[in-house]
Length: 513
Ligand SMILES: [Zn+2]
Image 1 (cartoon, rainbow, N blue to C red):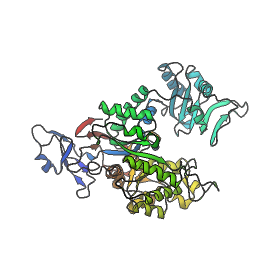
Image 2 (cartoon, protein in one colour; image 1 turned 90 degrees about the horizontal axis):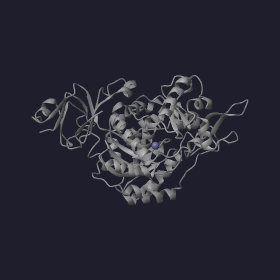
Image 3 (spheres, rainbow, N blue to C red; image 1 turned 135 degrees about the vertical axis):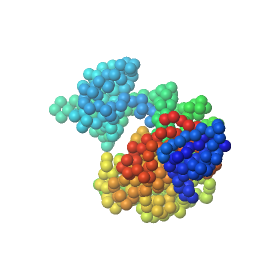
Image 4 (cartoon, rainbow, N blue to C red; image 1 turned 45 degrees about the horizontal axis):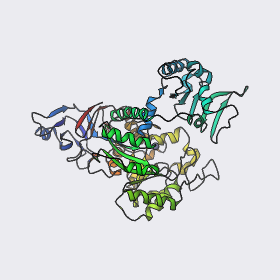
């Protein structure tokens, strides 16, 4: 008999043998049966909890393959300025936050926009609202920040400070005084003065992030760790049963030994899964390594952070630990370097993954397929590349047409998996699905909703070698399910992002979201 049964549902199984079903029965933490209401009714006993879903949609528990959980938590603790419609309102929000913050402690905010505020905030605006705390407030793009006098003092920035390459420090054109606005790389002059959070602060932030992530319908994440302290936090959350989803821990090479010491009660809940190796930098800062120079910057081809030989050494170290090498390579020259190393690596059980493989070409796609390399992308990043800064201008039309060619990759048989890159981009997996489906730049690369959903379910499970236990709604698999108020496959594509999560079932247990 079933412990739980979901009936009268629209179940998207992600199993090609029976793509949809009406009902599902769960016994303990596993899926007992998937089928029609009639078939599942036979498994309903006196003690079965029956959920009549009344036509609601059920998908496999969603998986985010690229999220920075602790960093997201930090952002959640920041002052939210997205609703501020004037400088006065921004000052009111800032005053409220200052009243709850110890004097001398930094206040970090995010989300303002000068068109909503009617003008850029100034140092004097912030000084008036918060005389006792250093303040740094990030613009909604996170590329610009507004700061007060205390923040400038603590950062040691004066009118004489020279902006770093690629950054601007705004000054009053008449008096030469700082206005409090720091752009692009100059924002880091202030940010570096903000102290790292304490372990307890980061733990509290991570707990908050975990709640939001679970409520977004995610039952598994690939947690990309940025600092050593996060490993301790993950361990604590796991040991005390505070992780509301499964975690595949991914760390940079420097933290590999620490991550290998993680103790897990159940590897399907917590596992050390991969190590990131950076081969180049970002396209927006022209640091991605290209075969040919950037179109608007002749002579600049970006740069490789590792030679082929150095990458081979790093990959071998990761393989020796038995986890997945996750190679961060954006430009075509970096992807080529990664592939050269993969091509020379003796056959092994580990699946290679290239993160953010952005600028591709016909030859690279073919080699990705031949080597069975998984491509991990964050669909929201694609629209940022074309809208926030112009990928076409930076790469030229021909190369830009090969920027994240998702459809071409899928048609060639390459496995592509999806993630958010939260907090750099929003958390919502449905926003990610929508971006892949409605993509405006080079619409021939749009995916169907089913293809996009597969990036967050079955293929995401494949990317961590767990497709036998999760990623689809099939008998014997772990009962991780997400219940939605609408069907992402049949809803109008522009409304996929508005889909609400009604219920999450993880390991057979119902979580109220
Ligand atoms: Zn990231």
